[in-house]
Length: 218
Image (cartoon, rainbow, N blue to C red; front, side, top):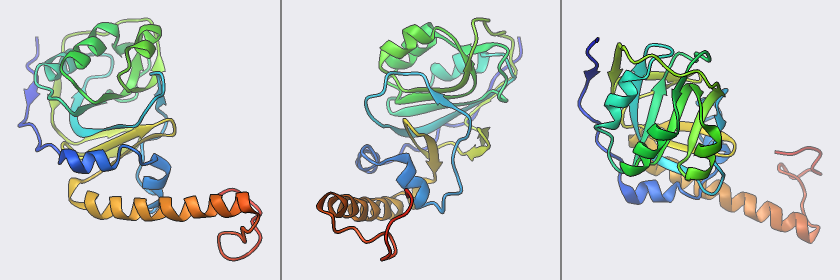
């Protein structure tokens, strides 16, 4: 068996700051990150009902092998989002019902898997946010290698250990903790502007985003 390299766990984000993003849409967060970063190609496999927010606890594993994820689950903390770089491989499921139950028991905030999963019927009803690239019944190898708490590439986005991760029905985005407070202020300001736009639409006074009649969605 190949040893799994574990690096020190990142400092977790301020819970009050995380709570501020709990009602923030990933679309609005993306707008305020110049619409550049974001995870592409992953789908939510849980029943919707809230925003996933937490600190990135990253895992890099050989495609089709989940030994490093099992090792990561031994160390994950309440509020961590388990972010797995599985190389986008779709041939074997990296997690299933049992591992999601372990993550729930550890009080993880969610899972983001750049690879396939299985047991999606059960996962949908467990309540833990779970984003993945695909579904397949075939199980994984458990041989390694892998690394824990290293920079990972997930859906074309590099996510660092300790980044704040937010996910909702539209997808997943991540950003460094040191820009989070400023970003949250910008997000709240955009939400207020958009609420005012919607109010004006309902009242029949909307003039368009730039003072002209609206012709298309934002």
